Image (cartoon, rainbow, N blue to C red; front, side, top):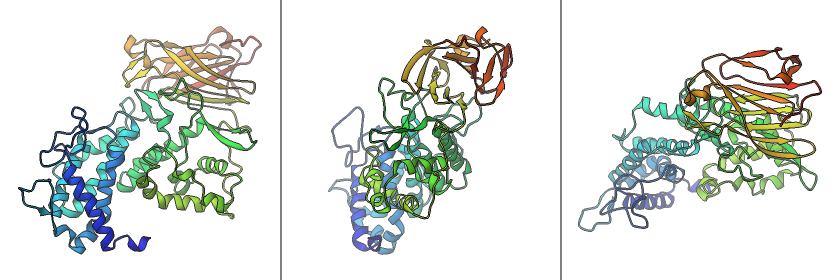
Length: 476
């Protein structure tokens, strides 16, 4: 109960937990070493721990616990009590405040120097870092291990894609998560929520909130409703573009998070939830287990409690009989929605709808943002009324620059009656000469107008999908 939030017993239990965290903490600030596995790394002989790029997913709870209770502990005198901080009977106990200052300094130093290699990892590390910094300042001021402000903001920008054109980041300018330079829809789930969480702690950094909004808009292009076996509608998600899961069919890498519903009031996200919860009354929704699902972190007790207030607000919003939600809203891929094409030149993804034909693909030739893969293979998911196709097709790449810089040329591929073009350069216009069957009779998909007859200039980063309208439109 909330009445017990700051009572003495609760605070003492939190203090016992934090006391242990300090005793178990390694000399480098974290709790695990890749070189010495399975051994105690804490006091009295603290080992040189390495930690992992995912430490923040769990250790954020250490900083968060202290941040929530620091002032109440101080009021109750708990920070002045003497505790064993190093498991060494030969050393005197220290005030709990000092033990916690050392605990936070170690964690702050670790998270300041241990970044992730994927957007989810980097977000977890930065999320944990901000909790530890806030907790440390509550009990003793600024930590000597804090990163410089410009360096920290630079990490936040690279983690969210708020960078200048051509600069490297974990996320594309359109909010598409990257792993090893390729789109990974796996990290689409909740990434926009992570950016929003960071903004809640750093509300003056408006780009964090904006990145959350942009990411939420982009993911909707890879979602489409289908009929389940029982005839009910359900949201389906393209997972074929996931770098890890290309040999797997199915899977869900997308879900709407609270900020999209409660702050941005994004109609597509509300529609996503509406489809998920269709035919459930308020009582059924309130006892439904899905909000407790997710990965190992968010389904754990800490993750569930941490997001409980937001979940309760969403449940109330989605089960309110007076809220009409967004029943008239359609996803870009949904039947009845207008034809469209959408592209992201950094993640090299394209999504387009032509009637009941839906295509989601990735040119995916980047490798850490600097060199293209040599095979130039595009990964394509085609959903037609008569069949579903998973394709791997070689694509063309034109450009006047050196081989290693061809990722900044024009990428092109023919899929049935469609020609997909994407200018990989964030700086230069590029010209593309149409193949014969697309010259003189092609239409720009969803625009209701003809494409130029012989060639087209593509703006920096521009994506274009044209459709052959004469009978000879056979292709891959």
